[in-house]
Length: 318
Ligand SMILES: Nc1ncnc2c1ncn2[C@@H]1O[C@H](COP(=O)(O)OP(=O)(O)O)[C@@H](O)[C@H]1O
Ligand SMILES: [Mg+2]
Image 1 (spheres, protein in one colour):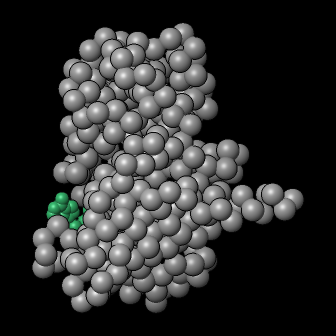
Image 2: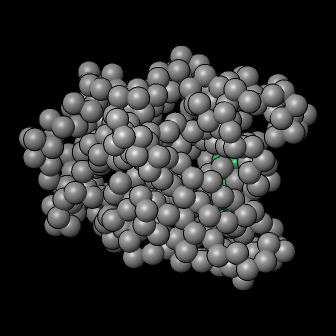
Image 3: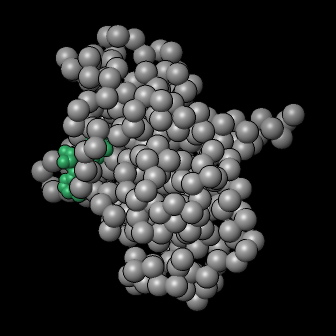
């Protein structure tokens, strides 16, 4: 029992005094600090532009955080992101450990999670790249056992019967489920999902959230999920972290999110929170085009960027 408590309190993510600006005048993240313990399922909420995607990408080691000197009025705080007790980023630099750490982190974006030309099964197999040698990873030869593992993962997320369909032929919800299956074969201990349900209808959104909740409960995968619609945070996540203009304005039980707090987080536009906004349905997120998705996926799998072109062109991957 003691061991269980120790595991639960183990920090999987520690974000310490993290700031980020793309230009020097305008901070996108401002002195953000929080930690996630193993086994937690936490929602990250905030209005569009509040910095959710930037924070998610920083945690995944896809975006470098600011150096302390760039913190401006925040003084000389040294920003750090620590995953599984090891530094992923510090003071503006992504560390050497990042490559190894990324293999332990599954990332699901709002869209473009799959290579459209490849089957769902092969897309899921891509989650194995981080565990393969560079040679086999580059030519993308997956063994019967690899495919069996991918099938089990597809079964787990309820789309095994679509295994041979191309990514482009799957519905939005099926694509998200395949992306989650990919993190399963990757054996990710931390799953970060950036608005995974923003483009889905309510039924598909619930199925995706049910799967995340099941993986969290049954497999004890730590889940951080950014959500525009707060009702899903309330329903699925015991804890919510809220961003407003890049600052954490709430971190606590989701049940503590009062109407007044929500108005302060989202401004007067709170009615957009309970229904999918028209622009979020079918919207194209410039940060997650197919090319950037692949660019993100390969480093996650511990592969060099030059491998991207090979996999992007599906060299040997069928
Ligand atoms: N690569 C980038 N270059 C410049 N500005 C960016 C970049 N990525 C995001 N931003 C800006 O950062 C702010 C926060 O964006 P984002 O993290 O995508 O917020 P959210 O996911 O909450 O909508 C926005 O104003 C956005 O325009
Ligand atoms: Mg976003």
